[in-house]
Structure formats: C-alpha cells, structure tokens
Length: 298
Image (cartoon, rainbow, N blue to C red; front, top):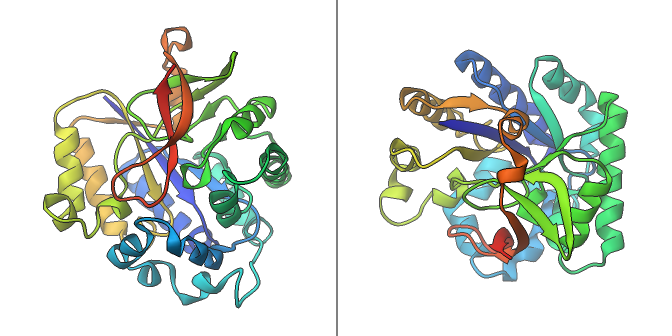
C-alpha cells in the first residue's frame, strides 16, 4: 500500500513559510513528497470573482480563508500588485530540490489558470504552460517531468500541451486510480495519477464525523486497504496552521503500514500498458466549489 504526497504551492506566503515547514515535517518522518510550485505572479485576491460559483461562499466560511491565507495575500492582484513568486523565491525552490524532494510545475498564474482556463481558447493554455515551463527551467536548470494543475482545472488543450512539453507524470485530476489519457483519437504518454482522497479544506466544517475531526475521518477511510492513494496537501494549510494535523496524518498512515512515495516513484512502479485509457472531463467533488477535472470511461 502506497501513498504519494503531492504538495500544491499556490501563493507567495505558502512558498516562503509553508514549504519549509512541510519539508521539515517530511524529513522528520523520513517520507518523500512531490512539491508542485506556482511560478509566476500571486494574484490570489482575484479569486473574489468566484463568489458567484455554487458553493464558494459556504467553502470560504467553513475554511476560514482569511485566517489561513492572511489579509495581504487576499489583496494580491487587486489592491496590491501580485508579487512574482518564482523570482522572489527561487532560492527556496532550489533548496527543496537540493534536499532530495521531487519538484514539478503547478502553474504560472494560479488565479488566472483556475478562473480562465475553461473559458478561453487553446492559445491561453499553451501560453500559460510555456511560461511555467520556461520559468521552471530558469530556476532549476532542468526540464520539469511532473505537472499538477492548479485547482484541478484541465482541458484537452492543456493535456495536449502537457504532452508536447514532455511531462511524464501528471496529477491533474480527481479519481480513484491511475490511467492513461486519451484526447480524441490520440493516446498520450503522460500518466495521470489522480488525487484519490479528500483534502482537509474539503472536510473542515462539514456536518458529521468528517467535519468534526477530518484527520480521524481520513484515517478511517484508509484503514481498510483499497489500493494506492495520492493525497494533495497545500503549503498554505498543512504548511501553516494545519501542520499538526499533517503530522498526525503521517503518523497514522505509518501505523497503518503505508509506504510513502513521490509521484514519480509511484508512476515508475506502474505498467503503463495495463492502465485503462480514459478521457478527462469537468465534474464535481463534495466540499469543493465549481467543477474540476475528473476521468470518465471512453
């Protein structure tokens, strides 16, 4: 039984303060993780445009967004200019790779990708992915192999661009098991390892057992083996106020006998020829507003 830890890094504050905390926790437990970085401007404040999406206001109230992200971050891109994360935090990013953690691309502009990908044309997806790719190479000196889409927003144009840029492994979707992507008649080489478990921000404040103690609830879901898992955590949450919760999760999963791996190592252990081919479409997940990428049978 394996669990791949996927760290989504969305903001300047998460990069500066959450990433080092998560790296320290992982090293203390002796576990690997894959850090996926936002590499361009932090425009988090522009998320206010999502206020009209079904479920957005309830999610904001449940998860105490101001408490977790801070007022300054929530003003970036509106009343405050959006700071360039890749330029300001290049040394932090290189430091994570130097410590032996797997690193990859989350996005260039997180707020824009999450809000604009599904309404703009293919040229937008190609431009944003190329900007992220080039910035990654400029920071690390090598090409990225791992991609994990911001907000699990993905469409056919972005999937094809992912293939063109040479990504080998992606975790862009929500689902239950690894698969190969098919876009139209084209079968892509880049393997998809979907996030299989709910995230803490999807569970916090929910009615019933899941909202009362999300960590205990997650551990109950994984207590009975049901295959390998990908767990997505956020530098702004588990790397900040929810760090003790992440520590509990790691201890609990270790006690359940799970082996921790990076996304790359999980993919390396798969026989791609035996994986099903699926299409990627927009769907919903409990606790998260709007739609996001899920796999569907062809």
